[in-house]
Image 1 (tube, one colour):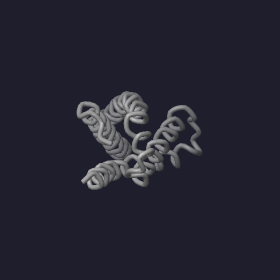
Image 2 (cartoon, rainbow, N blue to C red; image 1 turned 90 degrees about the horizontal axis):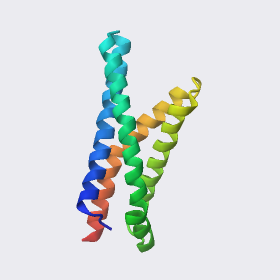
Image 3 (cartoon, one colour; image 1 turned 180 degrees about the horizontal axis):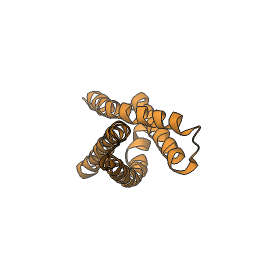
Image 4 (tube, rainbow, N blue to C red; image 1 turned 90 degrees about the vertical axis):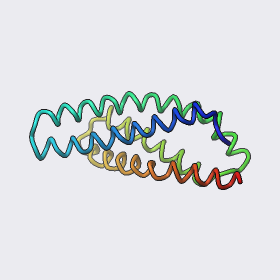
Length: 139
């Protein structure tokens, strides 16, 4: 169930940007605690700002992906396991992002942050696997 090339590349670009800005934020966040420089605080804030903006675009793209790709694939019974894992991973990322941004509980924040980071970096491996499995099944 391939989607149009321009849409597919938009998804890839959005997820790549989310991965890079998430990793950039993580490095800057560690450095601001170690080095204590103001520049790392600014880099962390900028990475988070770009990450949040790109997450909004990714939400739009994921919403469009449901009728264009997920529903059709589900009905045809193709790539169900990896597709379900992809959908669940994105749901976890959305829920934890909401919690990190809006809940603000200092007791829950570290736990939610680690879940968000782990799921986000796992998605960087799951997406290529999902694509590979889908292309392999098509042959």
